[in-house]
Amino acid sequence: MVEKTRRSNVGDSPRGGDQREWEVFVRKDDTDPMRHVGSVSAPSPEVAHEQATRLFAWFAEDVWICPAEETHRFSTHDLDDDAKPAPHPNGEEGRTHEL
Amino acid sequence: MISVSKLLCDLDAEGDGLRYDAAADSDADQIRERKQQKPVVVWNLTKQCNLYCEHCYAAATEERAPGELSTDEGKRLLDDLADYGVPVVLFSGGEPLVREDLVELVAYAADLGIRPVLSTNGTLITPEKAAELRDAGLAYAGVSVDGLRERNDAFRGQEGAFDAAVRGIEACLDAGLKTGLRYTITERTAPDLEDVVDLLYDVGLDRFCFYHLDYGGRGAAIRDADLAPAEKRRAVRRVCDMTREYHERGEEIETLLVGNYCDAAYLVEYARAELGDDTAARVREYLRRNGGDPAGERVADVDYQGNVHLTQFWQGYSLGNVRDRPFSAIWDDDSNPLLAALRERESHLTGKCADCRYLDVCRGASRLRALGVHDHPFGPDPQCYLTNEEVESDDVSV
Ligand code: SF4
Image 1 (cartoon, rainbow over the protein chains, first blue to last red):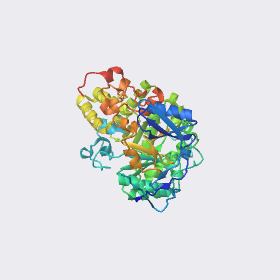
Image 2 (image 1 turned 90 degrees about the horizontal axis):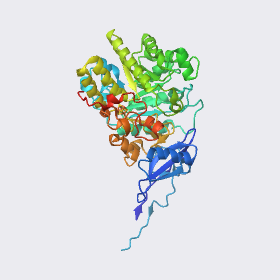
Image 3 (image 1 turned 90 degrees about the vertical axis):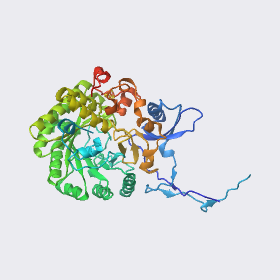
């Protein structure tokens, strides 16, 4: 049996001001995992890609862009007033090991 | 921040320990005993402002913007900052005085042992508000004025803003709050620089901070209004000359330069030309301890929605959000390649900065301006006004 981490669903407060906010993921080369490197403000995914390119072109081969408001975040961190506990069946789950 | 009065006139101030690792050499009460390990955090409490300034890096608006951190969220943020060891929180905006919980948050920070300071346009500070802020533990109020009446009001988008800001400064001084001027040097504001200092000195102010324009927020839209490098050099020279003239008259004003660390290189050049090699060597040693441009290291920003930025001016890129993850974890996450590279930027800088003999005191100045002009975070700062001869010189006597 393993204990599951208890997380909350971080609320959907806006992250952008005049422009939309876009989460940015990059990888250094095609064998690297994608890593989250923050977010940029931009009116469209194309402009967000341009912004991310300016910041990370010296480093990254691939860049993925994701609208911040479409990203559902589940976290153990508890700062957000609007966070709601995520569904958590029984608190534990079974796991079998086959040797 | 670079203290001109400390470096050229030997004026001790309570920020010396933070800036120069020079607490032991200073006669003033010190903010910290040791050189700063954790960043000063600017917290833009709100995007809302009662003015509409041309150079606003936060692109502030008249209406309250959605997503502001609540009072409770702000207190949890301050808890994390205190646990992490943040020495100073600068409450900024927008205009922080439009938030009704400002005094409560200042008091909360002070109780946690964080030094709370304020950046404000001053127009909403009444005598009562100044006393409340003082009683809450506010350590310092920096009030923005960008020229004499006519120029300031045009720049700040409201008639009467100058008079209201001066009333705010007087209210702070009457309440016994340590208070200073914030003055952004641009083509339009540079002509009034000395007159504003003279006028506000007569009002009772003795601390004057001069900001260079950075290219974030509406600042990017007025890049053309920035001074050309040669004019910028003249303006910095005027700050140095004016500081010395005041001190020679026995009027010990504190003057600081913010936002362009090639000022550090210039100050060494200035000291060598005006005050001799020994003074220049001492100035350089202090500046080396100061550590050059602080982006991503000694200064951080949390915006009104909880996004964490490399500096308060760099609002278009966020490292993460404090609603998802503690500030301390975001700031310590060196897996972010930009953050990691900024912390060892000497090996990434290109162009004029790469081989500069003043790299140890400047560190390439503003990466945000480099990004704005060269589309590259490690390009040279376009606002470096040092000549090629100065930065390439082999004369390393100081
Ligand atoms: S060349 Fe670069 S590192 Fe040297 S003083 Fe100018 S901005 Fe600073």
